[in-house]
Length: 322
Figure 1 (cartoon, helix red, strand yellow):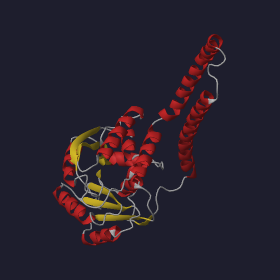
Figure 2 (figure 1 turned 30 degrees about the horizontal axis):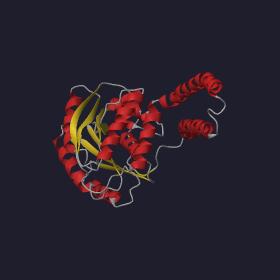
Figure 3 (figure 1 turned 30 degrees about the vertical axis):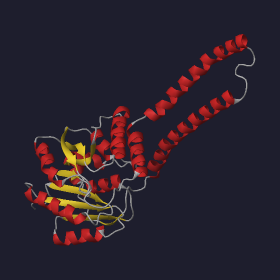
Figure 4 (figure 1 turned 135 degrees about the vertical axis):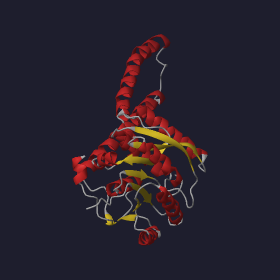
């Protein structure tokens, strides 16, 4: 029986993108038509509350290369990417957002690097159009911070826009943690990696789906998923505060002896010290709680997502032999 599996899969999470989706499909279709092999477009609808799923069904009816996965609720962008990887069948899988900030026309450049023998090709932003100074500053701060504290080398200024080889797909399917940072996981699995640069565009329509609270949660998942530095910081700070306290004991004693009983009189100094130490303790209790909460989520072993509509999953025989 001939192999009908596509050579290329394009995975796109979709959340409330009814104004963008037709144009996104038009531009992706143009790219798929010029690639040197069969293609599929996997649209993952992450609990969209607009007409996005209906538009997806219309696209599937007119183009058999379109697959759709519809979640029962919003499970999050990183989980949607995971579902797309679970269902993708191509030898090369491209992950791209559906808001057209990542231009589909860059995909052939990713494919060219893949054909050179690279198994993961990430797209690195050399410019970000249409974003506020605050967003640019916080994004830059995040990438510099994760670069300092992470246990792996995550390329700066890279998003989820990338191409991964089927061997990387098989490796990622084995990682089922709930608090996911996919750009970190794709680096963690290893393989031969390289990058290209591109200019990130403004949104085609609508507003950002990543407001500040989501950005903070995303950053927390990234740091706690790939670094123990916050936990180690508690130990380090504890030693520093203890050392300062030990040094302060003889200093205060000498000052009281030579400057009299009135020195350090009153409760202000004591209150400030107690409040400072109490604040530090609460901060580190919160850090411990973040890690403990993630352990709790993993122990429950719930599925990463629930799909109410999806194509058959690819067979796992090839994956077991890989």
